[in-house]
Image (cartoon, rainbow, N blue to C red):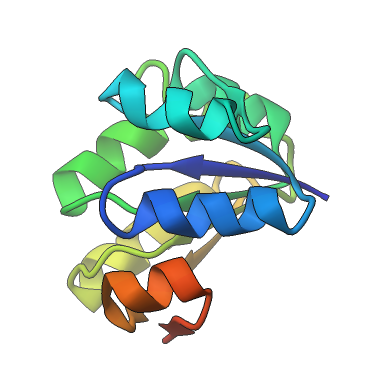
Length: 137
């Protein structure tokens, strides 16, 4: 299974690093390129856009600050969903309002892409240790 990760901040970068460390084929993208480059040195492929992440992955994790940014990385001109294959899965680890997550799921369903609202708990220590808890809706 090919995985992707968009949003490599305090939580996202160690989460993606754990996937790479466990041997997953991971493609990453981040607005700040240095975060992606650090993971590239560990074996991740670096995408130029979120679209490239969606094209290369069966499942994509997003970990960005808020709903407008989630919409941009998923539905923007170079967004994840632009060329993601039918049946792909996007797992959003951000913390957004449930009704906004439901709307994103509805919009992705029109493209035959699944969406999981999956906020996380466990702080950066949990992200680094691989012990986060996901609350999936």
